[in-house]
Length: 80
Image 1: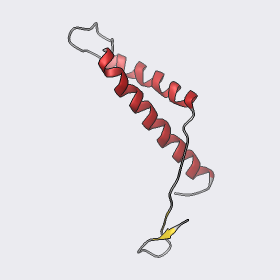
Image 2 (image 1 turned 120 degrees about the vertical axis):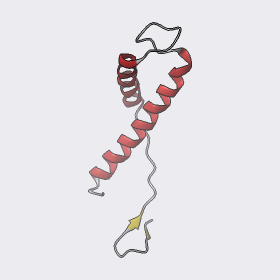
Image 3 (image 1 turned 135 degrees about the vertical axis):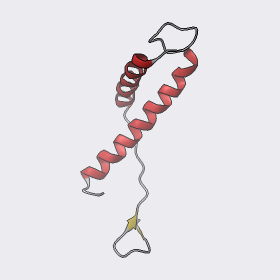
């Protein structure tokens, strides 16, 4: 339930969201394409993303999917 804050009319809510796997995969692909445009790692061809950077890109995609899911949920209920 909502908990009223110090300011009148301001409420804090807890939100639980599940990010769609297809959305995460799409964001991961977009992230990889964008990153490969600027990728220049020593020992790798220009545009190649090294294996050790892959988990970071996946983590970023999951984070972005959760943020987008929360934003969509807030928008659906007319919240700011």
